[in-house]
Length: 171
Image (cartoon, one colour):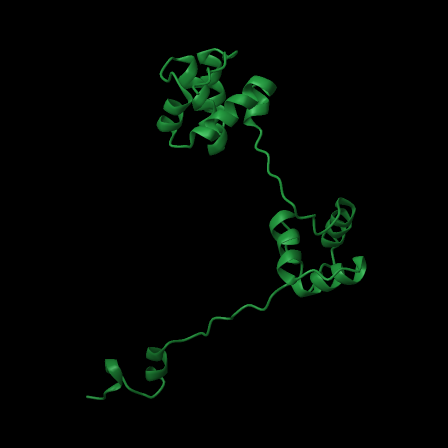
């Protein structure tokens, strides 16, 4: 069954402007699909899928969503997960406040311990690190030991033995 392509409300120039402003690849593909329809470069969902290198069911889903929700609805990427969040928004806010404390934490393990003790959870290190560092962009506030560079070289040591010739040999 060949389903008809939807009528595109946006003109070619508007689609080009959206395309120029967009930096996310999946949304760019969707805009390109609309552009192909509007410029009559593709006559079917199958052609659009072939030109964009995606499945025709994906193109069908984009265009169905465009018909119902318009351009903004089609550009919205929906992700559904069956997993609940590790921390509630209120707990994340408390963690963010604690991370912004000038005293800070000694280590990411200390952050994990604080989260588990404060909220009565048993979150693994990787989860707490992911929330605090990756999602919130937190950095530890404590100074780290640094390696001090040793002064001097082997050549400096040879000069100290009273040799004048290079390589440590006396003439």
